[in-house]
Figure 1: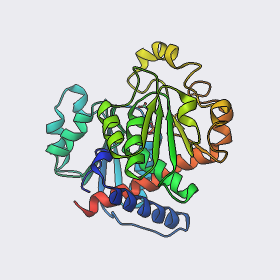
Figure 2: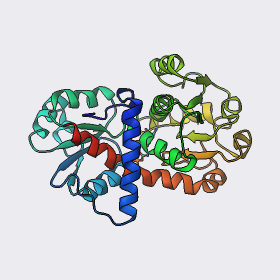
Figure 3: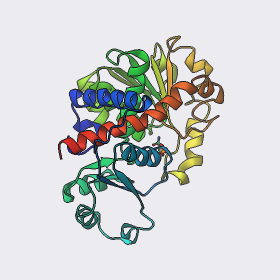
Length: 303
Ligand code: CP
Ligand code: NVA
């Protein structure tokens, strides 16, 4: 794999290889075993949206791998003043060894890869969040010992997280269900692909979707860039699309709860459920570091 633009581009084997390497890198880090696999390499990190986890885990990840990372806020880059992404790609390819980008349009990430000469990693777009889902799959496999056959249910807005969870889950042989309100369902092409390629159900009914779930996942009702729709969305989601004790009562008794974070307690998840599953959710956040280091190594291998 040269880039990580979206999970749809990866095979089951490529995902499995990333998860295996992530487990190994986690073990090595925990045991103080140095792994300077990317010694002297430089990653540029372009952020057009806020970030805690993605920024810090990529920066620390590059440091752990013996390289370095540059934080490039779009407010300070000429991109913010209209320099085309195609030109930025060609310029940055002359300085850096790889680029991570968090932005709005998926097309920008694809253009960066097309016009640049170095690996490009998608750190979240409006369309998908592949790095997060690799860490999620790692966390599920770590806890449950496998992925194949487990039921993964996403409750809430059919957003970037829903899109990537469907693709990642189906590719790894999981049963996937989404419970999203009408008008807020995941990407129609992804729904079509998932129905044709695996066990996927799409329903507006949360209790129907969550029944016998092994993993229950949720995310915010309004994503970054949708701030002006927050009130309108609240009216649609409130009281209906929340992971709470009642919803968890229909999942399997040992079901995990995951959240990409940041979480809005009292909205998409209750404080009670979040705290009851805090060890899973914060391990998931930690695993961003290990999974992304594996992604970086894999991208450099095939450069
Ligand atoms: N989950 C996630 O991507 O978090 P950040 O927005 O903090 O990077
Ligand atoms: N759906 C959220 C995910 C944040 C990690 C957003 O795009 O804001």
